[in-house]
Amino acid sequence: MYSTLISYLDPEWQELLKDELNSQNFANIIKFLNSQTAVIYPSKDLIFNAFNLCKIENLKVIIVAQDPYHNPQEAMGLAFSVPQGVRIPPSLKNIFKELIDDINSDIFTSRSSDLTSWANQGVLLLNTALTVEQNRPASHSKIGWQIFTAGVIRVINAKFDHCVFMLWGNHAKNLASLIDSNRHMILKAAHPSPLARGAFFGSRHFSQCNAYLLSHGKALIDWLS
Image 1 (tube, rainbow, N blue to C red):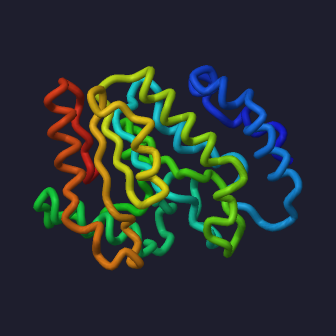
Image 2: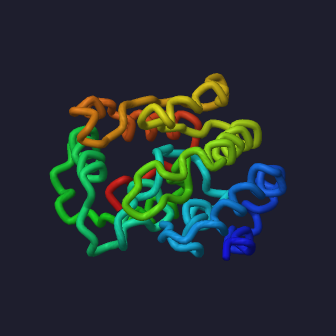
C-alpha cells in the first residue's frame, strides 16, 4: 500500500514540500495508487528517488520530463535514467547525442545509462508524473501528479536563487509560467523522444547551463561523469 509513501522521501525535502504533501491533492494521489491492481512503476521506494539523490543543499539544475518509463526494469525514479545494464531508451540516446555535440566531446561512448551522478551533483531529474502503469505511457498524468510537481516548481522558484530549469517537451514547458526568469534561467526544448523528429537537437542546454552556473559562482555540472 502507498499510505506510507511520504516516509520514503528525504526528511529535508519533506519539510520543504510539506504544503504539497499535506494537501488534499496528494491524499487523492495516494487513494488512487492504493486502488490500483495493475503493476505501477517505479517501485514504491523509488518514486521519490529524484529528490533523495539530489540533496537540497546541492540543488541547482532542474530537468523536467513527462513520466517514468513504463517497461519492466527501466523506471528508477530519475527522469530519463535507467539502471546500468538496461538497454538505453531512445530518448536517453538522443540526450547523449545532443550532449556530445554540445560540449564537443568524443569520449562519451562508455557513459552509463544511470544518471545518479547528475543527481548527486545537484540535478533534480523530475518527471511531471511520478508514477505510471506498466505498458501504458502517461496513464497517471491526470491523477494529481502534475499539480504536485507544479507545487515543487513553485517552491524551488521561491526558495532558491539562480537555478537552471531545463523544460523538455510540452508537459514541461507548461511549467515555465511558474518560474521567475529574473531569478532563474529557463531553457525550453522539444522532448528528446524520436517522436519529436530531431527538434531537440541543437538546443545546447548543457553548455548554456554551465555558463549560467559559472556566472553566478556555482559549481559546474560534470555531464560526463
